Picture 1 (cartoon, one colour):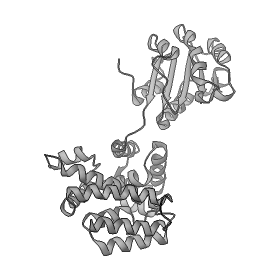
Picture 2 (cartoon, one colour):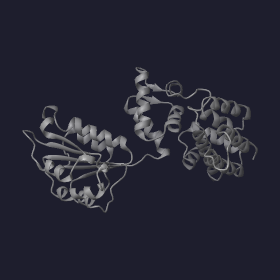
Picture 3 (tube, helix red, strand yellow):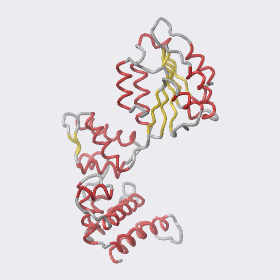
Length: 342
């Protein structure tokens, strides 16, 4: 049976009907877990009843027996009560401790909503807790980490939920410069939304102006220059990077170069080089990103693109001080020279 998704659970919480007596929220991506917990706290119990009927425990200073005893109590002059165990993963021997909930979950108090929050991992399907949950009316929500190729879609969806649209280039810049987890990248989106006010479109210029990414000298412009072997422009950008190391760390630049040549190498061996097929094959997030990859196909043959990947790996090793004492920006210039002349 498919597990309910975030929106389905959120809708149920806000409606306040058909709630399960037990919810287990777990996983690596904390953004959606936090949103659901916030919804439970704000919508399940009326504010006037919360003093007696809403209890929050924290894993590092809670005993399971006491949490269960609280859940077994009936609400005070109300229809139901809410008991939340936050940060359950911080308990000593958390997974084995949480198995103590199994007997309660098999026969829960139907006037209590018990929410168990376990972040950073998922509980095994073979655990007593999850087995009991699967055999009962409990709801399990797994918040899986977002894959890199999925991030652009999540950003667009989040912007749409706020009544905003976002340019493709702006989306790509957020993906590559901010990345996951969602709480981090969505936090940046929230800042932009506040700054934009009545304007309902987030542009690449907004990212450049408000998130500290230079308009003319950033890794996107570097990839564009490298893709068509524009050596003078590439050196100009690297010189700017060296003068502004805090905003242009070489580890990020090397990572983007590695990713670019990895995609070019894959694209070389695709039998179908239509735009749709190439985007799926290389995991390009948008047509704007694909343009650089197509340029890379023109200027780098399969051998050269694979060699470039090896050079990026070599840079990574040397930049950590292994068999090299060179300045990291000297190493970066050496990397570009190798890529252009291999």
